[in-house]
Length: 78
Image (cartoon, rainbow, N blue to C red):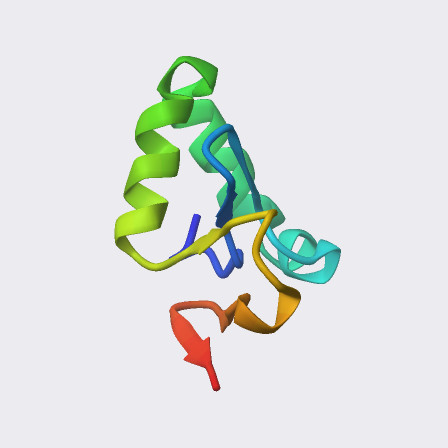
C-alpha cells in the first residue's frame, strides 16, 4: 500500500486508514491488484497495525494533534 502511494497509518491499536482520497484514487489500479492478490486482510489487522507502528506510521488518538506525523508516500513530512 505504501509503495502504491497511500499514506497508510495505524490509528490506535484497532485499525488503519489508507490516507487521502486523492492518494487512493491515484493508486486505484494498484489497490485493486493488491485486493485481488491478497483478498480479505481483516484477520491480519493486529499484525498490520503492529507493522505500521514499527514504521512510525501510527497515530495515538489520545495524543495531542501536534504530535501526529504526516507522510507523502514513503517520505516523512517535517
